[in-house]
Length: 250
Image 1 (cartoon, rainbow, N blue to C red):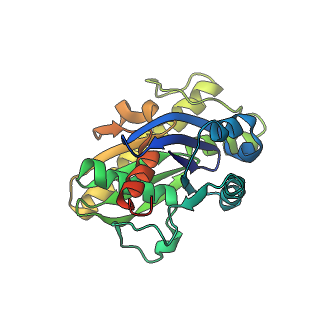
Image 2 (image 1 turned 90 degrees about the horizontal axis):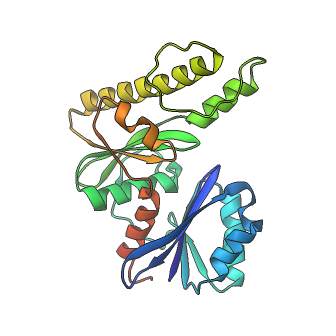
């Protein structure tokens, strides 16, 4: 059994992966800030005998703490950018080392699962768009502030605007402060994503399969101009695909 995980800035998702039957199960979310001290996480790890752990991480300090915890349990822990792990994706950007391991896992999964030109949009702490050619070439991406980060910043830096939980809405013009914020942020992000997709398509002159992931993917999917597919586990699936690609190591 292999422990797989995705350590994000706010939330971290972990799961069990049985390489014998190629099944992913027991998916669970944890708060990143206190994960290494979380009793539920300890149970999650202790209740199963793992041979290895393979993780994506955008928070190096947390990864190192978890790696230390797992080492004490004789579990070898790899971050997917580890030089020991091979990856068939050709990364065509100026500074490949700056590509986050979560984004690499996303495009790796997209390449293995969809076999087409893909744009993976991840609604995390940052909203990212990553562009992959069907022949396995990563052509770069875009990073914008995430939805929750935008809402939090708007509330924290103003005296009278409250922090709201974003909801899908058909209403364009808000009739009070809360609905005005909700409409502005919701339709603002829809317009931004549609606009960016239009720019990417016109610039590259290619058609793409659009894949949405992250906690807010379901809120935006039906409002976008472009047809999309939701895959909220694409990052973990990317980790699984990397394990399968490096089967000699595991």
